Image 1 (cartoon, rainbow, N blue to C red):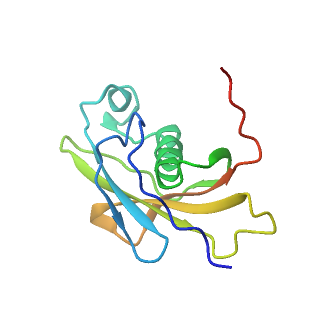
Image 2: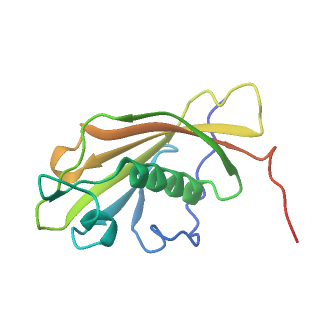
Length: 145
C-alpha cells in the first residue's frame, strides 16, 4: 500500500511558519531553513568559538517538518536519531534542507505512519548531517477543552 501523501498545509509552527516547502517527488517533500549564527541558540552552543547546530534543534526541525506535512496526525515518537556529522557555522548564514520521506510500508496499523527525515547542508547535498524516523498516529489524539 503506498504511503499517504503529505498535505503540505501551512501550520502554525514556530520554526517553519514561513519556510519554503517543495515536493521532492512522490510523497516526499523538502523544507529549506536558514541558519543564522546570530540566533541566540547558536550563540549559546559553540565549540572552538564557532556556532554548532545543536542536535536538539535538529530534532525540533524534523518534528516540525513532519507535522507540517501531515497535520491531521499526531507525533507520538522519534526514534533512531543519529548525528552523522555536525553542522559548524562560520559567521555567514547557511541554508539547510530538511527532507521527509514516508516509509513505503506504513505498517499493519492504518492509523499510523513512519517518516524518515534527514537534514543536509546545502553545501553537502546528499550527505545528511542528521537522520531520524518520526512516528505519527491518530490513535493517541486527545482533545482538551
